[in-house]
Image (cartoon, rainbow, N blue to C red; front, side, top):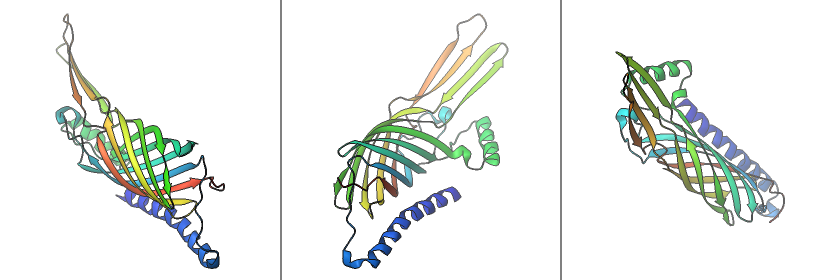
Length: 251
C-alpha cells in the first residue's frame, strides 16, 4: 500500500510541476496570450501510469496454478519513438501487484519468508511488451491507439519427490506470451507534459502449463499436462502523465 501511495504522489508531482511552471509563465506574460502547443515529426514520449488491473481470465485449474484477486494494482512505464508521421514504436515495462493464492504449503511458506526478507516482493509480477502506436492530435487533445506483443511472468515452481523408487515431478509455469491492444487519451497541459487516461488489455497467446510426471522403475514415465489461460489475461485502466521530448521544432 505504501508503494502504491508513493507511486501516486510521484505521478502527481511530475504532472503538477510542468503545469505550475506554465501557469507562472502565463501570468507574467498574459498579454502574449496562451502558450501555443507544438509537436515534432519524430517525438520521443515517456509515460508513467497507475491504476486498477481487472482479472478477466478467472481461475482455471487453481489446484495447480493457484488464483489471484479479481482486482490488483498495475503500474506501467512506456517509452515510444516516432519513426513516421503520427507513427511510433514503443517499449512498455509493466508491474502487476498481486499475491497468488494457493493451497500448497511449501509455496505459501516460501512467499511468507520472502515477504519477511523483502516486504511486498512476492506480489510483483513483471511484464514487458513492444509494439506500434499511432498518435492523432486535435488541439491539446491526443488519441493514441496501439497494439503490441509481450511476455508476463507470474512465477513457477518445480517439485520432486521419490517414494519407494517411484519418482514424482510437478512443474508449474505461470509465464505467458500475450497480445496487447490498448488506447490512451491525453490532454496537453504544455509542450512538455500531458495528462493521460490509458486502457490496456492483455490476451494470452499461449496457455500456461503444469506437467505432472510419474517414473517407475523399468517402466516408461507417464506425464499429464494441464493448461490454463488465466494468466496474462486482464484489463487495466490507468491514469498518469506523459512527457514529450524534443518538441522545440514545429511539425
